[in-house]
Length: 502
Image (cartoon, rainbow, N blue to C red; front, side):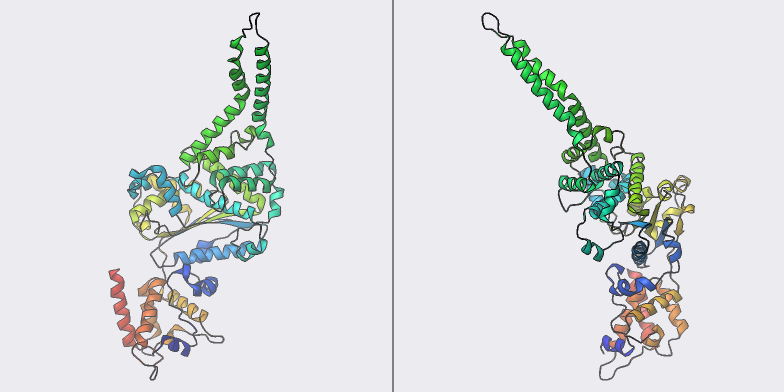
């Protein structure tokens, strides 16, 4: 018996339980993302006007990625409706590029052992990673020229190019400085992209080269004057005073001294950024060349990620937030997910703990205008409870919106299955999960069985396997369109035993 025929009999066009991963699930993305919610949705999503941190600890398959995608979609919709008070969305869910760059800086010996590499991971590495994502996205939006394509692929962070002309010189300088430190785009060369952004912002920097041109002019004058004196210094026998020649390089160096001092400072800053901004790709020469384009007085005392400390990162974060406020974003939300997927953590609780723990700092999690939505594996919650008093005083998890167990009841899983069936139903039909079963499978038994499965992924896998087992027992010539209790109980027992082995 064909599964499609079975579902078609119940008014369902396609199998609602064929997909398991929310990121590649068309039923979820097209339908359920708007109308199927976990009971803890309100606590996790919060109020976009006041971004706040929320932490979810849940087992694999419990729907952490699904709720992250829901938050993302709802924030995009919120931004579309509130053009003057939007929320900037940073999607912090692909850690491999940052960890790869990080390991390159540590050296091969340390990078070969993930536990040693992750022991060196610090809070400012997380902050640098988040700023890399946020700044690169902002520069992408600032340089976007095709507005029609931007509207079709709006990810909630689209900006009006005309707003860039309203930025004052200090704002333009801050955006260029952030781009110099954190822009990680590979769509064009670093120098070319920086120059294009500078022109788009209308940031004039001709005064940055005054010391160089003054030094060149001074050198020309020195060579001319000294050369003239040299040729006119001959005595009666025609012997010239050669002592004048060695003074030429001395005076030339004195004339170029302001430029050389600025070059040295920019080179030292570039080397510091290259060394201490460990999660990004930066070439010292290109970075120094870009820093040299800032006038010395405008670059003086500006924070840069050139030391192993968080102070500069907080200053840069505030600059980034101030820029976003000028552009029309009142808050920032960081969506963090998939910490068990990077190759360095490998799904191991001990490695994930070393990666996540530095981020659990109340100063950052409660930073004004910034909210984290953290989807964390269930194994980490046990580690949290076993941590020291010093850890809890630093993290202050009592001030965060923590959901210690992202659980589903039988009733909530039933509603989830129903919403997926309705999303796949033909127009005018409203199928119910209980309609798929014979009367000997009671509603209460369905709820109890669904609750034993615990998470949506297990529910979808079980229902898909159950449909296959049922259809394999009958032919198209002699079909049977309801599942009996024997098939149901057998499939449930087999699936439960297989799930325990995994």
